[in-house]
Length: 416
Image (cartoon, rainbow, N blue to C red; front, side, top):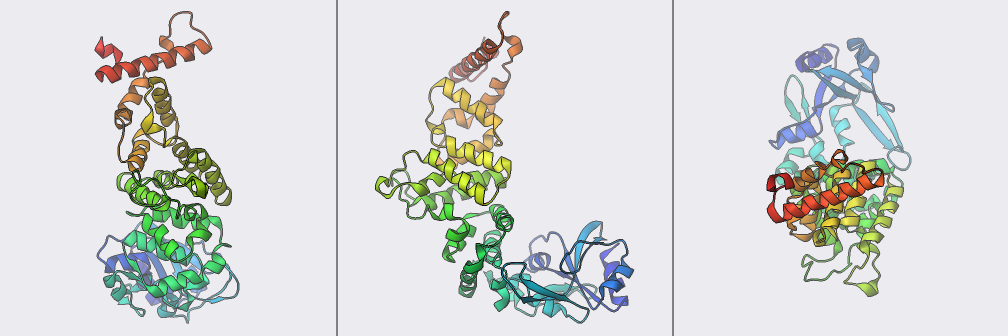
């Protein structure tokens, strides 16, 4: 079904159809819009089901249907109004009826830049709360006093700032601070989902800095907040304390690597510095091992995807020694461990580069070396070599290949 046909059918039944949310915002700001979300007004659910009998209802507490429009499964919601009755995102009474207007529906949204709609057929922009003005001013404001009723909206405002490069208005920060009382009771998956989207931004640090400014970082990401004020040797870290360092690293990794998992690994590489005793500062001896314990505490509170946890643990454990290795055996072992990890060699080295601002030659050319090492096969072991001896031979041959690469930049067969 074409969008025009969908809108026309709604109108003939006595209703109106609108596009809402991010698609409208991005259209206004001249960016490429993504998926469309729709809202219908003036229709009962029964009438809608008569019009679209194959539509699948996916909303639990209020009517939301999946409808095929222009070849895509799109969400079509009914205009609704909410009343706060309890804590958290479930503490609402939700009213949806044909009498509700699009303006009433938009009033319940989080920030003004998301509180505009486009009426289908007429293509008229419905902007009762100043979306266009705030988009032009590149500023994030709450639509109403209802902002704080869902505490995760504080994370959304911070995330929108990171995604769009918009500033956060003082009144928005005030509303975000008010979310602190309930934010700790929110399901960890809601927090995680906002973090993932923020990690996709060009500058993920904006998200975490906004939460810190709003006084929420300690409640949401205590492991990151613990890094604030943890001084470092200035000759190695002119950027400031450990928190400033990880903000710098995550942005540098984001500039090179699109993967959210890799950006997260860069973000948490120095978690162990948050538990360094004050008397040890500005040094952080042993923070690699301590960081693994801190990561485990994070994972216990907010279960991370398995590959995320494995990648982060690998980077925490190896990020200090990787640039300093000189012995061929240890270099070969590390490169093979990188290859077994969820990270690619190019991803690992970009985290190390962001952390240390330089790379040894073996890491710079790690993909090339790993290719050489993986060509070594136990099938080529000397006759009579069995069991553990095969593994020892493989490792010795890989070390020999690496030594030869270091001398010539070629594998043994090419050199000979």
